[in-house]
Image (cartoon, rainbow, N blue to C red; front, side, top):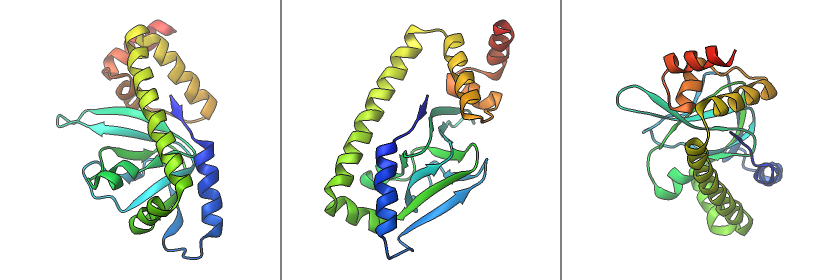
Length: 187
């Protein structure tokens, strides 16, 4: 439900400490509600979440959102778009105060060409995402929405964040009205 990657974060912490060219590799902060990446817009940096939680979501043509995942520390964003040379597939929005490592595209491309450790971490990250996507799809088929909602509420309490009803419904793939009915039944 909340994805993190401490190994990747440790790698970038060390890399950031070694960097002399601060304009290629900077720390940026975002407030709750800030858009970090915008769907269909051009990528400016590849980013790694240092602290905080974001939602990764798709906006459909009819205005509805579908939350793909909640991402936390150590999760990288923008690398797929960089590798495929495409605009942002999803939007990324801060749910609380978020700090990221922002790496300029030419610098990240040079790292990909020259840093075997980074390539290994990227492959691990891609494999983990495939596993998570498959697991979530099968989980949604096997378990009720009520069960998934309980887990979402537990994550919210554990992480001490507020997830709006709209975001909960978007994560579950249901309407807010259906969510309200389920919440009423859970009480």
